[in-house]
Structure formats: structure tokens, C-alpha cells
Length: 486
Image (cartoon, rainbow, N blue to C red; front, side, top):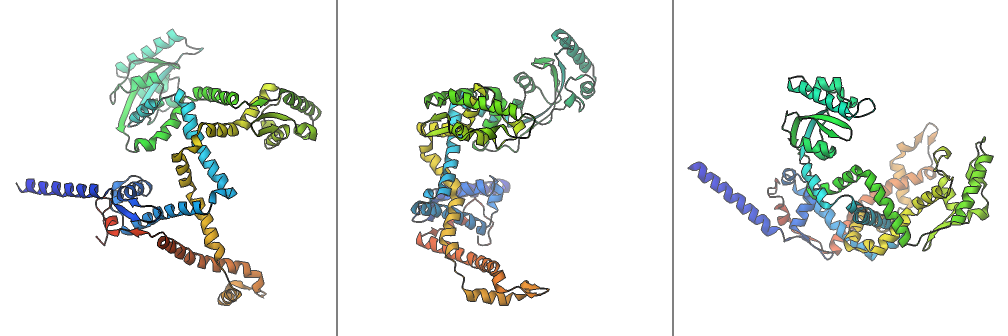
């Protein structure tokens, strides 16, 4: 009876904690003039970034750790606001970096996914693969290959004979070592190691997922020949992350798995973009290039001279390909070729060779232009994501501009530092003169001042942006909190 009452009390407490947690979810942990941070957002972000989803570690976190993370979230919001107010995206280095981040994400993770990957595998395939990743398999196999030494009938007879030996009680590993055409795994008794079922050929996968631990399959065929599989072990994949975190990895794995199909679709996609952008290829310019290059190769055949070195300035200006305001002339192509060792260069033997090279040079510009035309780079969620990735750069620029550049060091400070640290400048001949070590002294003083000035700058920002932290609410994050304060 006491046990039942105690259990009821525990359930009641857990229920109360859960209810309290839910009621806090929409409350503000931080309010400020640049935006508020709600309880659930703080928890989700810190759990993911600081503890990699480990709820136990989060529950045992200290108040100081949570305050540091919350302050970094607040600072990120302030830095974004200051970046906009200071027009940082117009600064060339920052502008170029933002452009690269935004366009890379728009092209690789969106346009290419929509236009190429979607034709090879669907999002259902991605979800199905995720489900398959929940189980790890450790199979062994014996392969009898169909090749020049054994035709299909002979290979089938041999695998059936091996299967009969297994049924009669012979050891799988020993038979794999003795008979398997897969010599790499055969020496280890046919072990394929821990893997997911989708890592295998479809025919092999279909057999494997039906086996029980320790069970041997009947002979089956793949494109390599005839197999017998043994499921040595099976376990749950404890390292599997939530779907949203695994999704990108799975898409890359599927792209690699269907590499040939991906290459074909990519080629079609680029050819389609070339037509849509009206890319013009100047065959006359290419013929000039090929003719001169061949002539130079023959002339320099027995020398160490580079065939690209004998093109006239007039020839170098000839346009090979263009679209909109993008132009590739002979000089651009030769400059690119000059960065590659002569024996590793792509050939410049004919029209098609050169067109393939031009496509590669134009590829990035074409993809960027097409992504812009389709509106991918104008999507608010992608712009916001790019700005998040830019935060360290924004912060560095702001700190250099508003903190480091304003630190002043007087001659008196330099002299005092020099006197206080004379032992550092002692040499066998005496002491280094102050003028010789002044630059180093300035850096040392600046380093000490910088930390102090940076802390003051951040404190002032929190005041200017009217930042208010609800510490009581912060202590209630992560269900149970092991703080001295609590």
C-alpha cells in the first residue's frame, strides 16, 4: 500500500513538473529592444548546440553555463542588428563572404536538390533510409563470381554444393576462406563488418533483412554472381540522431550510391541551363586556340617549355564563351590551365575537349545566375540562415571597428611598461633600446586593454538594447537543475 502511495506521489510530482514546464514554454527568458527569447527556444538551442541533444547533461548544467549560452544568443541578435545599421554587407570582404555562403546554400542544398536529386531519389526514399539506419547488421557472405572462369550454370552448381556443406554442419568462416571469390572478405571468414542494410545491393538487402541472428540464407544472385549470407549479429543503432539532423547526411549517401545517375542528371541540368541562359560558344575562337596549342606542343615537344606560353596578345583576347556580362576569353582559360601541371592538364585537342573545360569554368557563374533567376537567393529563410553563418565575421568586423581601433596607447604607458619589464629586454650586450621593442610593447598593452574594453563594450550594448534576463525562469529550464542557487 505504501509503495502504491509513494508511486502516486512521484507520478503527481512528475506531472506537476511537466505542466510547469509546458506553461513556461512561451514565456520570455529575455526581453530586449532587439527581440525577445522565449523559454522553449532557449532550451531547444542550448540542448542542440551545447549538449548535442543529451537531456541528462542539460538537466545537470550549472546556472553559469546557461547564462553564458543565453548571453551568446542575446549577443547574436545585437550583432545582427548592428551589422544592418553599420551597412556591413556593403564592405567588400564581408559582402563577398555573405554572397558565397548564401549562394552555396541556395544552389547545393536547394536548387540542385530540386532539379537533380529529386529525379534520382524521393523524400520518401530519404525517410525509408532513415528507418533502415535504426538497425545495424553484421553479415558474412560467400561469393561465387560469374566470370570468365565460371559461367552462370557452373557458378550456381558450386554455390549449391557449398550450401549443402553448410547444411551438413561445416563452418561458414572456413568455407568462406576456402571458396569465396571475394578475397578481401574471404580471408576474414566472409565478414562484411557492421553496416546498414541499404549499404548493400538491393538483392542482398532483401535477403539480409529477413534473416534472424545466426541464420544462413539460401543461395541468391546479384550482378556479381551467387551468394550465401550469414547474419552474425544485429543491434539497434544507438548513435542515430533525429531525422532532421540525419537528413542531409542521408541525402549525400544516396547521391554517392547513385553516383552514375547523379552525374547524368547533373550533366543534363547544366546543358539545360546553358540553353536557358543562351550561353554562346565561339567555335572560331576555340579552333584558333586548339590550332595554336597543337603547334606549340610540337614545337616544344623535347623541351621543358609550356605550350601555353606562345600565344599572342591578340589571340588571348578572343572570346570563347559568354552569357549576359560574363565572358571567357583565351587568356582566362590559359591562366586557369597554367595553375595545373602540364602532365595533369585536361586535353586541348579538339572542339569538344575545350567546350567541356569551358562548361566547368562557367559552371559556378551559370548556377549562380540561374539560382538568382529562380528566386532561391531571395528566400527569407536562406538569407536569415546566411546571416546566422556570418555572425562571427560580423562580430569581428564590429569589434575591430568599435573596440580595437579605439584603443589608444600613450608614450607614457609604453615607457612605464618598458621600465616594469626590463628583464625581458636584457641581452648579453645590455638592453634592447625602447624604439626597437616599441611595437611589441604596444601589442602587449593593447592585449591587456582589449579584454577590459571588450567587456565594457558588451555591457554597454546590453544596457543600450535594454536587455533584461529572467533568472528565475532561467533556473527552471531543463526540468531538473542542479544549481547551488536552486
